[in-house]
Image 1 (tube, one colour):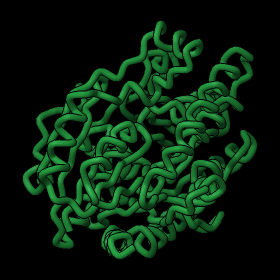
Image 2 (cartoon, one colour):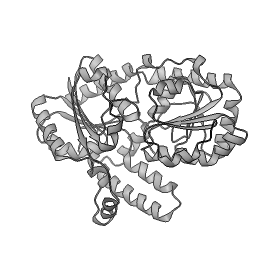
Image 3 (cartoon, rainbow, N blue to C red):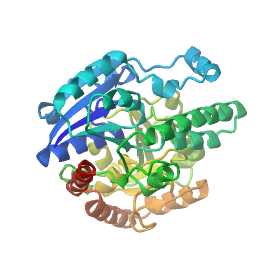
Image 4 (cartoon, rainbow, N blue to C red):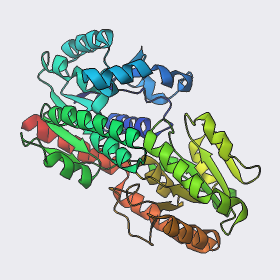
Length: 402
C-alpha cells in the first residue's frame, strides 16, 4: 500500500508522545513493506526542538515539512470570543501547505491518507476533492473532552467560563469532522465510546493502542537511583502543566522536609520559567528538556503521572512500563491501558492516595521492582509495535475493500 500521513507536528526528534506514536507507526509500516509519505507542519514554537535530525526514517520516506506560525496573540483570543473563531484549530491552516499537499495527493496514487489529529482536519475537504483514497482520522485524544475537563478543574469563574466556551466550540467542530472520514482509529475504548455516541453516519471506529519498538527499551537497575521520583512529559500541553503544578503544590514540602523524602525530578519540553520557583537544591530538580529521555527514565525509580484532565492514551506511561518503572498515576492518566491496580501500576486520585502510594514505594524497593516487571509484561503482551502494525494494516485492508 501507499500511505500518506499528515501531521501538525514534525515527528523528528521523537521526544514526546505525538512524535513517538507517528514515528513508530511509520517504522512499523515500512518494516511491513509499505510505502510511506509524511507531510508535516512545523509550528514556530517547535523550531527550537528541530535540531538537524539524523533519524533513519527520514531517508526511508517521502518527507515534506512546512514551517508555520501557530502562536495566538491576546488579540486573537479576545476576537475569537466575539467572532466565534476557532483559533485553536484555524491557526494550523496555511494555504501554501494546502497547495503543496493537494499537488502531492494528486500525483501520489495513495491508497490511504491518514490525518493525525484534529489540527490537520482543515485540509480534509481539499484532499477529498482530488483523491479516491480512503481518508482515515486518528484521534490521539478527543479534543473537546480535554477542554471540558480543564474547565472543571478551574475555580476562577472567568477562566472556567472561557475554557467552557472553547470546549463547546471545539466540540461542535470536532463532531462534524468525525462524519467526514471513511474510518476513525483511536487508542482507547473510552475514546471509541465518545465518538460512537455522536457518530450519526456510523463511521467504523477501530481501537489501536499505542505501540512501541521494545528493542529500544532496555532497563538497567544498576543505573537507577532509589528512592527517586520523576515526571517526564511535554509541558506545552496544558493538562501536563496543570497536573504537575497540582502535585508540586501538594507535595513539595513533604518531599523536601516531610515523610516523603526522595529526590523529585521534572523533565520535559517547554517548561515555563515559573516552575523554577519550585526547585529546591538537592531535593527538587526542574530539568527542562533532556537529551536522552529513555536514559533519564532509566536512572529514576518511581514515575509520577498526576493528570487531572486530558484524554487518550498516555505514551509516556506505556514507555515507563516498558522501562519497568513503578508508576503512580491518576485513573485518568492511565485511561485506556489494561492495567490491574496494585499489580502493574498504582492508581491514586486524591492527595491522600498519592501520599500512601509514594510512602509505600520509597520504603520498599522490591515492591517497586515487582510492579515494574509486571508492567513490562503488560506492554510486551499488548503494546508491541509489530502486533499493533499488523492490526493497523488489517484495518486499512478492510477499509479498502469496503
